[in-house]
Length: 149
Length: 144
Image (cartoon, rainbow over all chains, first blue to last red):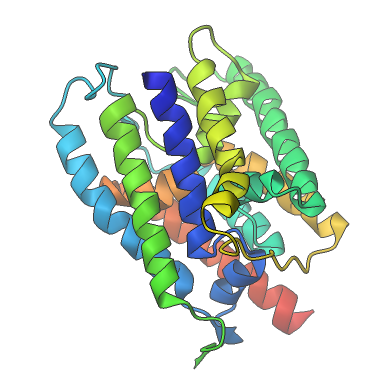
């Protein structure tokens, strides 16, 4: 049952991205281009998603197990540190460069778009690079708790 | 500021957004997981026993979304407009992969779920990647 749910929710999330237009890098860049002809659609997407999300997470926070009986994996880190900010700035630069973030990249790869396949391959390369750098950083660092989620 | 009225699609944006919100709420309520794409994918690169299948099933659904939605509602999937060169695409992918893992999240994990959880950490991350995205597009489209 949890496997079905994971698959269906993945499908649903992909549909949401497609319906919202966020799988089109042109539309994402239209939002990020404040100085050009500005397309506010992305703000409406975030607004619609958060409207439902706030209600869902308010219920989730009060529960110790999920409705299907799994453990709740809510994030525990509250650190606002250099990793968070530098990582997010890097992500934003890549996002502005091509108009793809991870979800739309994967969905558009599913449409068979060659440039999205290239994007996803490079993104997995970047994630693999993180694993290498993070492991080295952690083995050099004696500070406990670094790099935890 | 000039609004691009020809491309602005408030209704489909809002409806699509609500669907994203339903999926995110369902994932935490049914599976106890935060729906963050970069974390779900990135976790497969340092695989741990018992922590693989849920990621694979979710990602399979995500990747099959275009084909299935085209069956259900023909014509709803618009062709993507991709201006970036192959070189820019590769650089963008590397930055997105590395940055989302260092920053522990992307538009879904921080932007949708984090803000829905009212997490200050996610608010800072979202402001950082939005600001960085605005500056990058400004530089590419208006300075270079």
